[in-house]
Length: 260
Image (cartoon, rainbow, N blue to C red):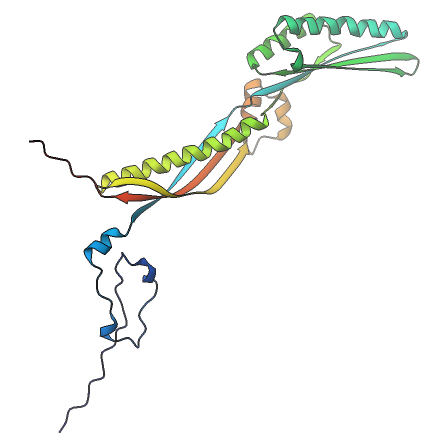
């Protein structure tokens, strides 16, 4: 009595060498026979395949505002036009001279004047817009003007802001710090496994974020007008965050030469 024929063997799983990552996601079909299995790559060929380490890096940087703007308003209402002009111009000259003595440049001071008739009187108003780069000097000048001038002179609270160039520099700084953090991480990984970190093969910025201030959600925006100078600076501080992804080449660690 003859034995039944055994059907030919079929392979349902294939172990793909790491060196051939092009087929790691392509399983062998059920119709392939054992003879269709690929042979292991020669050692010389496997060594030629580049080894890589993939890391991500994040960074968050911040910058305080680098400009502040203060507006000083002087006004007077008189029955005679000359008296209204004289009253405003006298105090206006005092303000501009005080700013010059404090070392403020003319390009940082803008003066506008408005003269109109109100019912049976004449009203004149002058506005001095001052841009500061030193906040300590700004506080000294504002305190001085409040002390020397009467209540008809109104000094607005300082408005802090960033110049466009400073914001762009902050974005670049966040990206560069994130790249540096990723490089340090890759360096430590390679040192831990006894390898040498090579050159970067890919650098990609995956995510960027930017926001202003750290005001508590429970704090009403209306309270900002009564905030202190430091609180105003904090609320105008800009933060930038960056996340990068980098692929580095990994090279074998060099053997130390023995000294004779």
